[in-house]
Length: 309
Image (cartoon, rainbow, N blue to C red; front, side, top):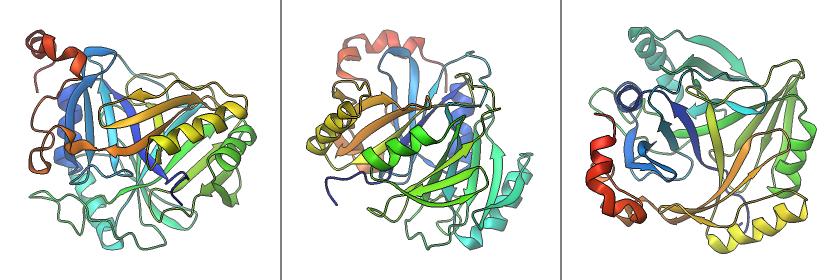
């Protein structure tokens, strides 16, 4: 299993206001702020990582909160919905809690799994899903959200595409996913290398307009590999399939490759190593502003320029 894709590693999206984004995901949704750093290419913008206690792969939602970037449009060529797994007994808790915070919730079933669909303050489309199979991951808890009710991590991610076939080919031939089922224009693919965060859904609709990346939209989705050796094996596979892919990039907490799949979604491959305790102990994750080493000499200026939290 070690030289295979191990489901989702993280998902990265765009927000409009750093403080609002931080408050929503830590207070209302009860995720842990695992890392507070800055965008590698734009150190005047935060990069937040939200997850479980350790920031385990498959639980990490990250954001670039670009102040004043304006509203994006979810549409074709994007990962449009992020699905979190919840326990069956947490369903009513979340329905009530989201309602209390004046969040409009839609109840439905997707592939026979009970789902609460809603949007974050920027319009990012989230889904809380009761999986058919038991998810034994332990959520981060807060004074208001117990481990019984907390978010376990990702269940799935949904891509919206005009034509699913080329993307399905990448997922099956390169990344090792298998077609599990289809209902109408919705496809479900999964990998059996891991039990959780292992599902990619595709909604195919050639009439859907293309999305536009800004606040409330996805930036990229990252698939998980064990280490950099496996990472570079996959680089060869992607190149052999005729797709362009970046060189290996050191993201401080993992190593990455990026490529755009034929449907337009930016895919990343990310390693488990070295992890989030590389530069601060487990108990203090997310408490300190951590800067990529090339920016450490500019710490004072960067701290002054970042939005107030």
